[in-house]
Image (tube, rainbow, N blue to C red; front, side):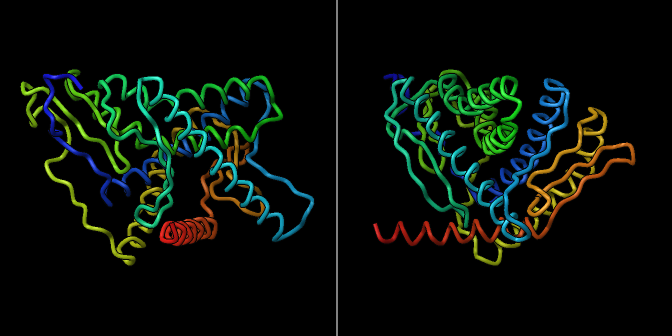
Length: 298
């Protein structure tokens, strides 16, 4: 750390329940936009419509189960690679990355962090945005070369939606003076600054509410998140997708789907499968419970 920088952080940002809810809602919207954009890109490059589908030789319920497991596998692998890229970026700027898995507000969370290492503002922004830029560009290039690898659209969508926290922090840091130093922590960041920089110059809220959520309140927040996502999609996504003439696509397949955009000669519409939403939420809660059990045994 620069000698002229304070030894104690001028501000410590932590992920609160409110911020987590906002990120989840905006991340879900960003996921849908990324899926639509990647589908549009695929259709232009290869002159054919892509459908997010996972086919299997089974029928009925088994096809839906296999599709769900494949979707879950893609999410897990994308998350792991996303965090590995964070770690590589930390190391490239002189940090000592370490990785972990924890539960935060009933949701499993994988992370890469480098506590005790201090980075310049711009370096930390590049570290934060590295997975978003690197993975999306690589997947777009592979998608252009290999038309049969349409499943990469899923990777782009989940990687982009999962980067909402990185994007939010990067935007906030851009509003901070360049002279600050940033330390990454498991549940947030600590900002160090020279004596000439005051707390008023930072864009973060004055206080953090770290009181844990109750189970009932967490479920209410999840319900609010789903409702907010539907409202945002209804009033924003429909005109955007129609103006851009994004071709029809579905996240999932006919047996297990979450979101569907229909755009054909008969008209256009957006559909959500609430059964799939509930299935995903309960799966996340189950993963959270299992992760907590594993952590207690360690």
